[in-house]
Length: 421
Image (cartoon, rainbow, N blue to C red):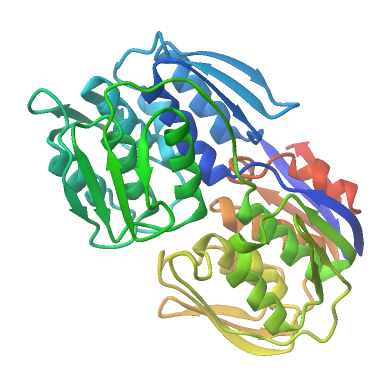
């Protein structure tokens, strides 16, 4: 069992490079199945979710060359076969459901264990099921898994309206529709940058996806797809996490390899708080910021404030002056970080799924546990801010999504280490 130990209260400075987007790569790896060829992915983060996906791909017959020092995966899917995927590995991450769309598109069938990942309250897959059914597939629920198969000769393009905006359902529909006959139109599609990233790979492999990044996506199915080379976009959630940390305890920190447009709503909140920033073409410098003011945050679908960033920004809010609230309209139960921060002395509570805080707070080190990926990131930031020593358990959640977090934070002056408990 591993723990992260942080001796906090130290100012930081220097440069933090941002890795490839976790929320992209977990869809890009299953998407390579559609090519029946060799696909090279560059900028792949060295995180446990990627390791799990690689292992699952190899179980299906893929041949994969890994070079995590250079962030490269070379994936040969010509020997992949559609076989039932192991529940244990599938259950370790949420993005396993992307195998449904990829396998259904290439082989016309898929048997995949039910997805796992962080417990953020209800995360139904009914929109995925609705889309697959509309394309001509039927689902047979099995114990701890679901089996999908095409009813006729192939999937058939159609128009699908998403009842709510869903990144996962939008991507899964794009994957399956890329190999369907005819044209598929997704209405009320998600608009996140990761959607565009997946569409770019699909098009590089020979698909015809138009409109990604808007609420209407049009996919013209193709019978065959081929190999390609693709670079993963920078991780906007990792960037936002470190921007918040730099604003809280930084004496000049540069966040490198960022796309400003992907972070506009987050940066707008930082500026509203009074954080001093210099924005350059592919980097953001956070200057020493003082006398920050409290703000209210409502997380909504992109391009609004990201649900994945409401937890990482919370420790920064606790260093402002005033009182405020956070409402997450995507995952109403995304509040598990609150009692852990309270353990560190934060004046923070939950009332009717609304997080209420009063600041400033003098955080002190404590023994806390990561209850999910982004809650874990929030505790790392809180530990770096706090006086004294913080021990974080359940760090497997953090390692699912943050590439070399110990090394990156050590380089800017955070006293942080990973230990065997």
